[in-house]
Length: 303
Ligand SMILES: [Zn+2]
Ligand SMILES: [Zn+2]
Image (tube, rainbow, N blue to C red; front, side, top):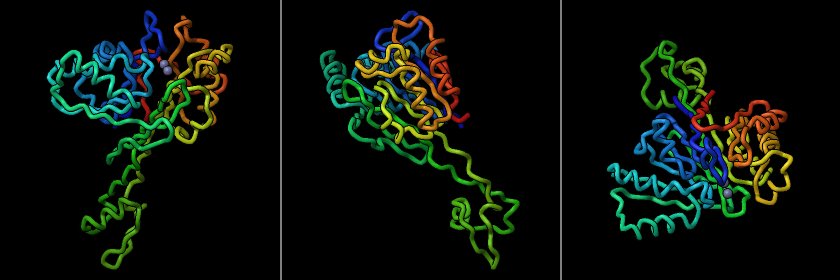
């Protein structure tokens, strides 16, 4: 089962020669979720060979341009490529209106349904769930309403070990064993632990951009396998970070540590930084399993 994030853009408000505004694509078992959609997203999707039409859900954290200015272009390209299946967009209040104005004034009628869901900047909410995955949005503390997202795999079921079951069991009894419950059948007790394999671990990925350092985030990101957190500045610019509601590399690492995540991915670097070794060193001094988000980087959430 694939659970992998690819970084499409790692920069903050301004791009640099090799860093673009925030965007990531999450592949969960060949379902594709786009998280934020900075200006270069279409180009980056093409570069790393992602099919636009496989994306069915897009998540936008907030309405600063570096997180969604690529959206109208991507939506239009999907239309030009002949898309007919619906596209869901989860994002803040105002996004629907902005996109509709752009489509109306260009007299574009999309060939496919665009479904909007407004995120709640005040409290955590489940915004999507199915039998494999659940997705929540949760508040980030930024200059304008902003949310993070957490993608969590549902608990996986146990698998039957056929050779350990001497009977042909009806579906109801099989289901009980898969749930981990012992059953009685034809006068014998069947032990779930013996008749089924332990369920595989479920994994989760949390995304936080943009936000001031905020320990209240912990309740929503705790024990994520991987956490993406912005690290716009180095810690010697703490004052600037606080004033602009951003985070330093050191603070991102502190949060990762306190939230007990397995791995930390930092990004959203200010364009003033020409290299990122200092961000990495600073974060690693607090949380060793840190990676620097760079364009094209793939991180396996399940490893
Ligand atoms: Zn930003
Ligand atoms: Zn922002």
